[in-house]
Amino acid sequence: MESRPAPEYSATVLAINFRDAQRYFREPLLQLHYAHTLMLARQQILTREEASVCLRALDRLDRKQLADAPYDARFEDFFFFVEHRLEQLGDPAVIGKIHTARSRNDIAIALYRMCFRQEILQLSAEICTLRSVLLGLASDNVDCVMPAYTHTQPAQPTTLAHYLLAVAEFLARDAERARAAFAVVNRSPLGACAITTTGFPIDRDYTAELLGFEGLQRNSYGCIAAVDYLTQTASVVAVCMLSLGRFVQDMLLWCTREFGFLCVQEGYVQISSIMPQKRNPVSLEHSRILASKAFSQAQAVLNSVHNTPFADMVDAEDDLQPLLFGMLDDAHRTLRLLAAVMQHVNIDKLKLRNRANHDFLTVTELADTLVRREQISFREAHQLVSAMVKKSGKDDAPEHMIALLHEIARAILGRELRTPEEELRQSLDAEHFVAVRNIDGGPAPGAVRKEIAAMERQLADDRQWLAEKQSRLDSYPERLQQLKSEWM
Image (cartoon, rainbow, N blue to C red):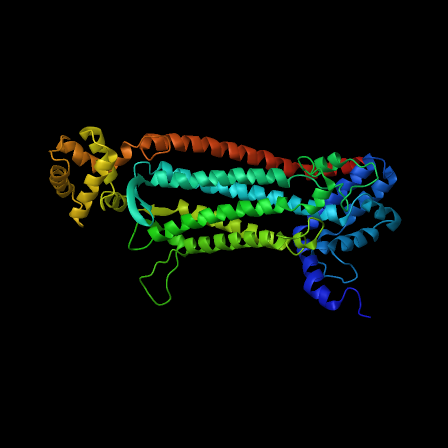
């Protein structure tokens, strides 16, 4: 009969999962051991003497040895390896009592949640940093008129600030989604045990408090079977990376010689080994592929747990967790790199302004002016201006367009236009186009400054939330140590 575990199973699964647990879950597992032991003692499930033996053994564990130990096939996983090391440091009959009223099931889910909550806070901090960079760039470019595009074609004048605020706004929504994910993730499953809790009089709330959780994942079956805490985390990353990928596509297009709107600074470009003239904005390309990798891994997480039974299954456990960590790592890299690149870009404001004043981008305002001054419907104004554009060919000089407009008005309306020439000319100016669009959320300087102020207040609120949550996670290990000393 083949040995257990089989060598191939050890090599392809157990050894790999052991190393992953060493890397990601070593310290959270020890914190969990401390918290559970303290709860058992408080509930008088362990005597003071038993609790002291267990806590002293935990203190004596060699952290470096745990981190560096090779996989040992005598122990199915890292949990059993740590349990064995503890038993060597105290009375095994007493040390074994640490495992009263718990299972690897609720332990594993707790460890995943303890790691993901910190990852979500880091993601939130990086989203805040990128938002801050973009808001600063927007503040510096409130009056920088530029062309807006729809369907990849020049559409209407806007401002660079208006464009950047749209990006900052979806990042603010990403921050909201991250906050919602944190609220789901930072719930304790401990006490669910295998799936139906325990007959011992444990205090689930106390253990949750000791480990920095904000309440319980209540239903014990759901504690073990539900995976929405990790799928919601993956969804936050997927939505954020998808949106950022679209933004990066624009930035790369703007960096082309044909557009020339944007120039990445020297520290973020690479040269060619053969073409002396090349100055490649590869930092943006790296941002794009990292975002795509994170997005793809998020999809893979969702696919991995799709159509699995609603129960305890390995599909959502050891083999899947590294994929989530890889997803989060690439998302962190994307956000950090993009914030650094955008903080150090040069903008050709003159080229943006010139492009905004060409290609007939302002003729919507010309049509609006005809509606206001000529007392005609917008459909009639649209017909007049559309005919003028078609007849203009490639000549978008204001004088040429206005002359054609008079000619077409006589033919279609059967009369001369009443609008003063100066108003017609003004309606074709990009700065004027932007200035009259002073509606909330519009590109006019007043509307934009109002929006920047609102977004800065929202950013400050998000940073305050982040500081409070991080403080909670930073402080619970110290409290664990303080409480431990009372039982030793």
